[in-house]
Structure formats: C-alpha cells, structure tokens
Length: 164
Image 1 (cartoon, rainbow, N blue to C red):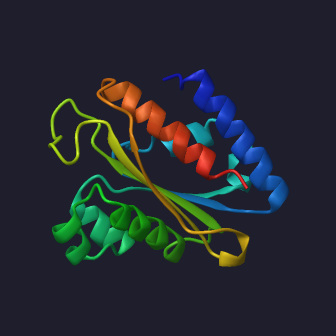
Image 2 (cartoon, helix red, strand yellow):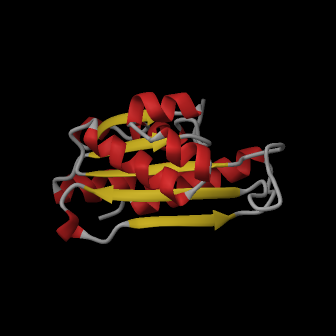
C-alpha cells in the first residue's frame, strides 16, 4: 500500500518537528480508520515520536478504549466537537503522549443528515501541559468529495494539528 505523497511529506514534517520539540504523539481516529497513524509510521524513526494510535470506529470502542462518556455520545453523537475533545483527552490519559489528536466524521457515501451532511468531520487536539497551547476543537465541512478524499483531507488537517 502506498500512502499519498502529500500525507507522507506532512507526516515527515510532523515527526521532525515533534522530535526536535521532544514531544510524543498519540492519535484517536474514527472516520480516518488509522490513516493518520499510517502516514506517521511511514516515516523511518517515527518510533521516536509516535507513542500509540487508537482506531475507535464504533461508539463502544470510543467508550471502552478512550473513556468517552455514553452521555456525550447519546446526546451529541459521535460526530461532535465534544466527542472529539473527549477522544483526544482519552488518548492522552491512556498514553505517554504529550499531544493527541482526535478525528470523527462522516466520510460517506451514506450516514449524513441535514445537520451533519457527508463530509462533516470534527477534530480536537489536547496537550498534556496546557501552557503549551489552547484547547482546539473544530468542525470542518469538506463537502461530499467522495469517501477516500474526505478521509485524506481529514488526515491532512489532523497532521497539521500535530505540528508544534
């Protein structure tokens, strides 16, 4: 399997800059299914920086592996900034990482709704030492670009969030 050149180039920058900063990373992925972790681990020496990756596709996995509360999932849904934030916090809590990124969204072709159409992806970044930066939770509306392209665009956003 070859990973998209743009993803690999950005992953190289993420690995290099976090190695220089002395930071360890964790990912918590849903709709990207491990694409961010795959891009990061495509880089030789990634083990200096990547602590672990969680692929939590189901709500049960989000709860069991990351501690996302059933209340958040049942009230706001898996594709919500609150869920992404809880996923990022859970990834930090269950790792030795300094920074974690979380992604949850609707890659399509089905599963969208009027409020959350296909292409809606939520992101969060959590940093163990909050003095290093603000809490980030954000929603992107990529539009219905097709499943593969939505996942690729989401992985690019997540990688950018991992830059120091």
